[in-house]
Structures are given as structure tokens and as C-alpha cells.
Image (cartoon, rainbow, N blue to C red; front, side):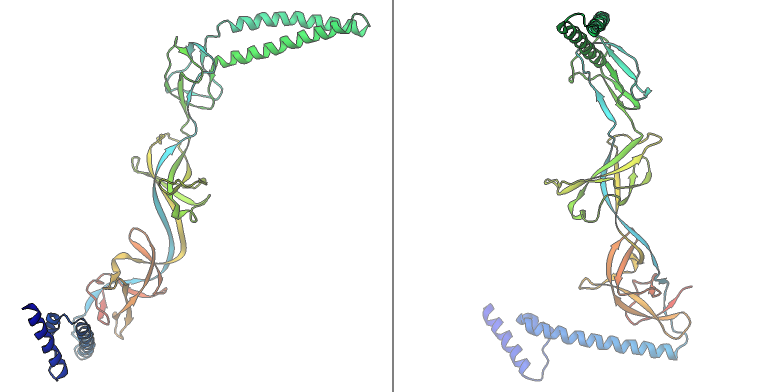
Amino acid sequence: MKKIIYSLCLTSVFLACSGDQPVSTEDLISAKDLKGLKAQKEKKIKSFNALKLELNQINTAISDLDPSEKLALISIFEVKPENFEHYIDIQANFKTRQNVLLYPEYSGVLKRVYVKEGQSVKKGKLLAQIDDAGLKNQLEQLQIQTKLTKTTYERTQRLWDQNIGSEMQLLQAKANYEAQQKTIEQLKKQLQRTQILAPFAGTIDEIVANTGSNLMPGQTPVMRIVNLKNMYAEANVPERYLSQIKKGTSAKVSIPMLEKEYPTTIRQTGNFINPNNRSFRVEAPLTNPDEMIKPNLSCKLKINDYSNPQALMIPLRIIKENALGKKYIFKLIPDGKDQVYRAQEIFIQLGKKSSDKVEVLSGISTGDLLVDEGATIVENNQRVKNIQ
């Protein structure tokens, strides 16, 4: 039954097309005639454009004949070049290379801790002492023996200079003296390893080990020392920005927790692309005079990836978009009367944008006047009036 009805509809459409009677849109939809619908659409668009043009002509004539014509009120935005800098926002964390957990180099009992948590120390300051287990006494005894060995060597040398004694006695005395000197040097180095010194100037953040604890070299942590003066923000940047971000690129560090923002530059860019997230590492230094910035504090690294000192920037609010997705604005053409213009539809090409403006790459020039407030109610070729 459906096939019969469909055949009758096609027949009626064919007969209508072959005669002078116009085919209705309902008939074309019922017949599912795609070609006919497209032709109908083109015909309607032409009619609509013709009517719109005629309406504009009527409005123009009315405006010329009727001085009391009510024009749409708008405000004007004048296109001027301005400096534009675009930034990309990357999540980052603060770090410092002077954040060290100190471990002992000598096995023994922690004899004494000379500092307290929160205390500021200078580089090389003695922080803690490990029991030397008699090394100091051994060193003192060896130093006494070395004095005798040195005296023996010097006397043997004088006798040898007077052709008294044998060469073997001289060589033996010299060897004994030099061997004891090297032993003293080794004992001194061992004694230095019983001391824990500050590797850099900073603050004792935490003391882990207690006095009397047995310490194992490289295994038992003693204390942590931190220097917060020189921090840096570290972030992983997507690889698509690889050609735009280099050493020396200007940037900003925004810290939401402190409600502060600081200028900086990119100090280092990584030479390795992480295969897991397709990103590379960047590093931006930052001074921290008040020491409010702490390691691992979250921040945003804003990196300048584009700059144009003569950019043509327009507000985002005045941009409109047609059904095809093309962006356009209304350019104002003076219409012969004071503060009266005709709005002309101009398609534009956009570049990068800021929070409320966007750069226009083509379509407008310096000095052009655009519709600002009222852009949503204005149509092409419509006469408008500026609100001063």
C-alpha cells in the first residue's frame, strides 16, 4: 500500500513539474525529491535576498523622507594597534636543589647534635658529631711516633751527606717517615667523616636522629637542611610547543595560594620527550626573599609563546558567526549625517586571544570603526546611530 502511495506522489510531482502549476514544498518533502528540494531552497534564498534588498531600499528612502526615523543605537570601537602577548598556562610545582637529607659517612654512635630545628646555619658549620671510637687517640699517638721517625730520617740524611752510614739505612728511614705521614692523613680523613657539616647555607628543617642512635653510612638519616632563597618552577609542557619555548623565553609564575604573580624566564628546557604524556620539562627560576614559597607548592607557569607589538585587537563580544561557522563583524561606513553610519558585514580571520580580546589577522585595518554595543541587534546594510 505504501509503495502505491509513493508512486502516486511521484506521478503527481512529475505532472506538476511538466505543467505550469508550481510544485509545493510539502509535495517535494512527501516525494523525498532531494534535487527538487535543493532547487526550491535556492529559489527561496534568491527571493529572500531580493526582498531584503528591497526592504533596505525602502528603509533608505524612508530615512531620507522622514527626519524623525528611529535608528538603532550603537557604540563605536575604533581599531588601534596595541602590544599583544599570548601566554600558555601550565601546571607546575616549586622545587629547590638545596633541599638535602644528610646521611652519615662513618659508622658509629651519634654523640652530639649542635643545632636545633629552624636554626639558620652557614656553609661548613658543624652540625653533629659521631663517636670516633678512639680514632683521635690513635692519631695523637701516631703523630708522636712520626716526630721520632722524622728525627731519625733527618739525622740519617745528615750522616749520609757526610758519607757516613749506608744508603739502605737512609732509604729505610725515609720510607718509615713517609708511611707514617700517609697514615696520619688517612686518620684525619676518617676523623672528618665523623663530623656532619652543612653542605650549604640554609635552615635546619628537621632533625631525624636522636643523640645516642647507632648510625649506618648512607642508611640512617640524621637531619634535613633546606635553602629557600633560590627556588624554581618545574613543569611538563606538551610537545607541540617545542619550537616556541626556548631558553630565555619570558614567563610569569602565578601562585594561587599566595595570590601573587612574579615575572621570570625559562632557564632550562629538557632534551627528552616523555613518551607517556608527550611532554618535555622546563624550569623557571624565582627568588624567594620572604621564604613563603615552599618546595612542592603548586603554581601556574605562564609562558609567552607569541608576541606582536602592533596587533589589531577587538573585543570578543562584537564577533558574530554565521551558519557556516565563519566569523564576521560590522564595520561602520559614514552615511552622510552626523554620527549616522551604515553597518557593513565584514568576514575576518582570527588569531590568538586573551581573556576578553582576540587578534584579527585579516579583514580590518587600523582606524576602522566597528559596532561595539548593539552588535547583536544590527543587520547588514542597516543604518545605525552612534551613542556619544
